[in-house]
Image 1 (cartoon, rainbow, N blue to C red):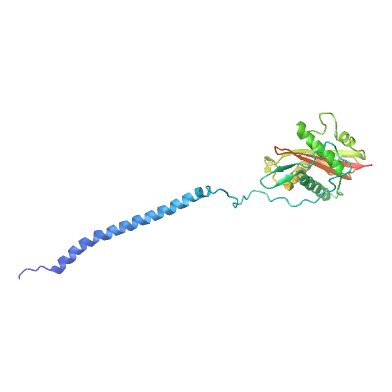
Image 2: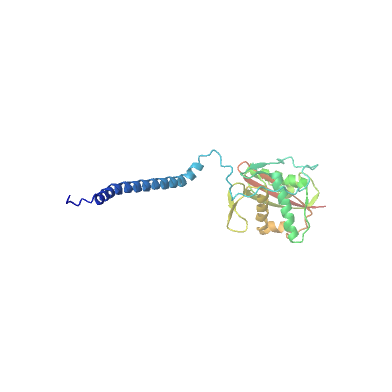
Length: 255
């Protein structure tokens, strides 16, 4: 009867002792769960690029440094003249990652580009000559086939000799030649940068740039050679299996 037991105080004290460890355990479990979720998110972000590589095809991924495919070239002119060089190999082609480059398309683009450069210097456009183009194409193929690069072939025939063996209506004759590559880095004409030709249009522009950045070739295109003015021309391109590009551009003044 004379004791002060204060049961309510004792009960409150024991209850607090029991609840605190339970609350701490809950907080620890919550923290561990949060850390696990965060770890899973980080793993997902880290592994995402690896998972992309497992797809069979990535055709929908855009390659931003590829050139656009060539537009339709302006037709240069007659492709089947009455007189052709018996050694003319006809059309050749090469497959790049962008398009199938054909010699006919390159020739059409080169012819248009040359006339554009002439127009910039107030010169009349060259008329396309299918026979001259056939002789040009035969020489381009011969250079690739016999592994040389020169105006005079291993038999000693110069440009006028090769044309005279096919026809005789040109009283003056000139020739530009060029050698480059498809699908391989090459020097960009006019500067120290490298480029890779993958389209007929880009290749044609590069060929004409190559000639225009060479004094003697430029003189032939712009009639600064000291001879008669040209009135027609023909471009012959041969595309080798290894991506080699042989181009011959002949100029003619008729009688």
